[in-house]
Amino acid sequence: MVCACAVGLALAGCGGGEPTTDGVAPVDAGGAASKEANERVGAAPVARNLLLISIDTLRTDALGAYGGTRKATPNLDLFAGQAVVFESAWTHTPKTAPAHMSMFTSLPPRVHGVGNLNTLGAQRLSASIHTLPEILEDAGFRTAGFTGGGNAKGSLGFDRGFQTFDDMGESLDHKLVKVEPWLKQAEASGQPWFCFLHTYQVHDPYLPPGDYIERFVKPGYDGKILSSRAAIRSAIDSGDDLAPDLKGNEKITWNYWFRVDESSEQDMAHLHDLYTAGVAHMDALLGAFLKRLIAAGVADDTIIVITSDHGEEFGEHGQVRHDQLYVELAHVPMLVMFPGRAHAGMRIEAPIRHIDLLPSLLELLAVEDSGELRLGRSWVDWIEAGASTETEIRSVLGEHRSGRDRPLDIFTLREGPLTLYDQRGEIALYDRRQDPGEVVPQKRPVVTERLESLLRSQQAQLDVLSTSVGSGTAIEMSDEMRRELEALGYLSVDEDALRGAGASDEDGR
Image (cartoon, rainbow, N blue to C red; front, side, top):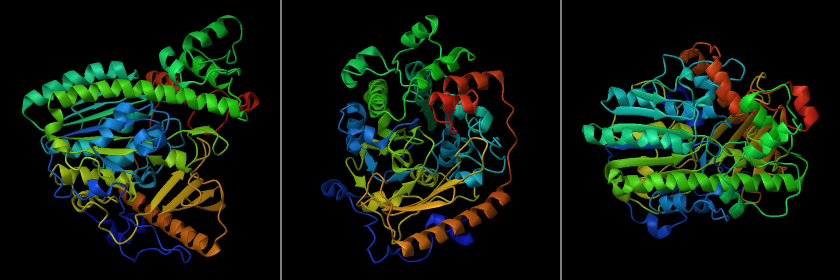
């Protein structure tokens, strides 16, 4: 395998000493929240199978295991208690396609080149890059991928390496009806297997079942947001159609969002409540599924990973949905249950990234990589030691575009507790020790200059690597793709109309 150190890439954390932070000692890269759990160390068990679950748009703080207070995720919290919890896991982008492709390739978006279908230069993954499912299929694994479609379509390259691939856009409960029979067959086959499950269950528009609204949405809301498809259809039928030129699911989505006042604290709180109710519904569905798997003994020789591609914003930084790179969007859950629940309750504080997932999982499965460039680094020895074994903190590069037809123009570099935020040339420094929400910029010019220089250096090096990888093929939008993207709100009406209705015109609707 080509090591990132060979190209001197700081992104991978190779070489150099522990970074300084303007005279402030860096945070301990390997501290643990649960000392007793982390003292139960030993070799991480080699697993036979892998179940990777990605819950699109799941905020870390929605989970009680990460400090959430709404009690919306009892099942995921129970799972976390039997797993290793990575407290500082980060995405490289707030978008579905590039985030998941970073998990599958161990390459940041600037290198693998895959973006959402509705963004500038959307392309299928280059044939020169081998993905996690391809590697496992070559190693003799039975493989299956079940995604919610949209920007997790096979046309982007997510189907590669999967012997069974289902990217039909449907709810989690319908998807699980397909997943469980496949798992039963895979278990009976005697072969090792890999199953990838992706769901948009908590994605907007937030329209949870009524009983979850009763439990999690505070009474007394008197704004214009409608919280069910039936209510939206009723408004449309009565002549209150805010998107008369749209059809189908896109009409539903924009009749939802055109009623949102982003300047209203009441609307932001109500949206967050509806989102939380949807998270609770997802937790119930996924929890019942996991309970059945564990009862059937599947977890005895299987690694089960639960993560997300990005979080969600409810006005914390002036927007809604997921079009920025602040902490509420970039910090993601990462829960890893080992066979036999080894290392249950361990919590790792050291930062990890989506690109670190592939090399870690291959090591745990005792599978050799395909020998090509990977920029992530395994964290398996951290599990064996009970904490990070590295002397330097892994930096996390984030990149995004402020509009779907614009080039990349929003960047972050996270180093320990520090975040350098570059929004179209406006630089801000945040220190999450004093400012966990990344709200108050720090005036520390020496640190700012150092991190900005490191950011530019990493970007330049990644640009060189991206040329060596080569580009993939352009995507032609089919009618099916368009319908699924419309259902998720990714294809929108004229941007001037959006601004006039008070909705954001940012990329990724």
